[in-house]
Figure 1: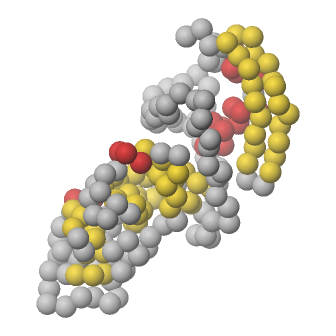
Figure 2 (figure 1 turned 30 degrees about the vertical axis):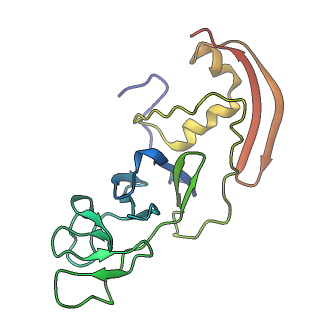
Length: 199
């Protein structure tokens, strides 16, 4: 998809942070959803008890595509030799007579909050040192989730919060005014706008 605001450039590195994987209700118990983040091929899945997990998509045994497998009571099952991995990444069963103590898939830091599944990414593999605050939905309409792919960096998209002018020119809002000063607090940036959406 081409967008008039997106110019092909060398992409900067993907910054550390929490990234939305999917809506919570899009991943039922036993469900799987493959996705890509920072050039990595990952898999979100929910075990039979309802615990969400994010792991690499490839089985550590022979590289089988775990997204082509299934979720059983033992965990995420590879379709090739039935290696089953629990939420902590440990191997719990195989298609052989013994369980492999060496086979392990790395679970990613995960947060289920505000109806979303969020995974933490750091380019150097560091653990998260912060979490996004939960949103108070009282007085708001129900959350609506759409997705699309844009040929742009995450930095370009998130810079829109500081660009009052684009609310009128790009989104078509009128009577746009800034109603709260910018507040930077660690990894968060907050402000507030008032506008009329005639669409």
